[in-house]
Length: 332
Image 1 (cartoon, one colour):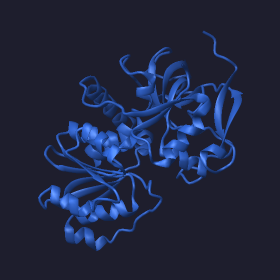
Image 2 (cartoon, rainbow, N blue to C red):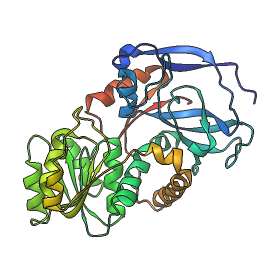
Image 3 (cartoon, helix red, strand yellow):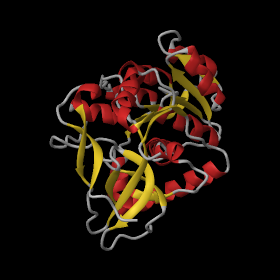
Image 4 (cartoon, one colour):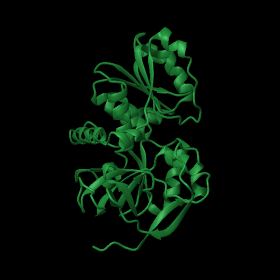
């Protein structure tokens, strides 16, 4: 089937909130260069970095106008010279800024094949959230069976992935959420305890739940007060993994406190693994597919919006009221 000459793409044309910043434009279908793959996009999972990109607050700041969207599912439509590992017609997931469009060009190393049992909607959010959680728990924190895992924002996309992967690793999970409704979702995902932010004293509750032991591993995509609470309840030889700062506040660290309590603070920016060690990403993807097929993980989707309503997906995500992923369905 021949490729069209043009496509629809959402572009950030001015910095601001997604509803104001995004414009639906007709643009040329890109051509894959050497080592690249053209993907016919099936679905795009909204991510908080998309909101930050629209605001001009992300660590990567593309020149205006640019296409946001950082992960998608779809079908390989064309291959650039030397691209390997996939074939035209393969169903894949991909991660790269610029996928909120009907077609997207991504490096072949950023594309992974998916089984037919995964729908485009479910698969669209499988890459960044689950890869982030996997690398945080296994590579950065070296989590072990029986350890206590504290997950902040546990009902969000990456938090829910961390809960599921923590349970799959044999950890005992405590999730921190923003409401009673979200607490039930986290408990259903296998967490032993759910704490409500603003209601429960997180540090005191973690100490009570763990019998004074504290959290061996902390998964923190929030920062701010969540990080400070974690330093008060982290266990001896515990590891706090810093994922991001959804609270908008980058906390400070009293280094002497890490010495007195004997804990570690480590960072995780998953995108650097895709750039520097794509073979590790491929290994993690294979393990995630094994866990999916075994029923140990299942992407949680809050709701799906049509492509024409993509800004609404980012607005909903920015509100903090969603559970799991908000997905933009591009190709029906």
